Length: 380
Image 1: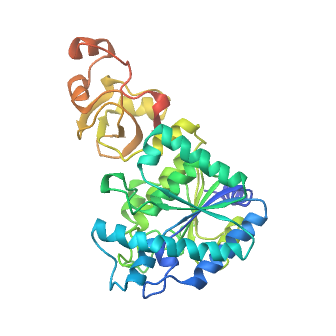
Image 2 (image 1 turned 90 degrees about the vertical axis):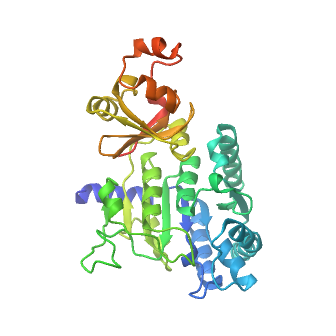
């Protein structure tokens, strides 16, 4: 990215009106694992100041499990799902009470919003959540969003609040997603293992090599995420047209980002996607993979076409019609994600065949396309 492009991108951040801020557990807790009221108050003050400037702020906050763990006197974060859910049930009220007090002192009302993956997987619930958040913003509230850990079963969990923050950003069409964490940004290699690792100021393409170099999770006792989950969040948000900044959670960071200063790592957005495609990206975990040939790859990436059966080489996983799947090349590199018109079993039967032959093989041809362009989002 040249200096002119970088300056333009940072200027776009300064102009952002609707901003999603995600803060992780490690940024809200003491080394001992209890809720750090001072850090929380500083964050609330900076968000309130940005709100007073006329921006719309949505906060995705971790910390409920940690707050509950501390109140319960548990030596470490529960490893099992029931233990995490029980700790979250205790801690969520404590976390919201702390936020309510911090924002009330600054004249702002907060609203608790708890989501599960099912709330974005089903189109009707996705739209309902979107409308609720928009109404809260119109009323001048600051939505504080967390995963509904208390009730979500494993298959309905986001897995981490990094992913949740990206999905919230796509849900509301945010102008910017800020992920505040315990590192300065993204490095060229894992700085815990490589002394020569350098901080990357801008990233234009989240490649598989970049993900591989990101390293593993952080402190399991203080949270679930790691650099890889943050890169996945950045991939989701930028693929829908929202720029992302990954930066250290310390006093002054958020205001500096919103002034367009060179702080942390900024991930450049791709072309702004229509609302339906934003839903496609975030509506579910991929249920399987479709491997395509070079011709299909060109058609998808360069010609803007739909995926046809003739370009399918192999099918991995078991999934029904309508499922979200990854489209990958022969090396396993993800090219796109989309909603398939055919099940895995049906695709296995029609892979590599011309569209006209589908009816002969399956006894019907409900769709010409395996994945229609309107239901497909390019990943890189």
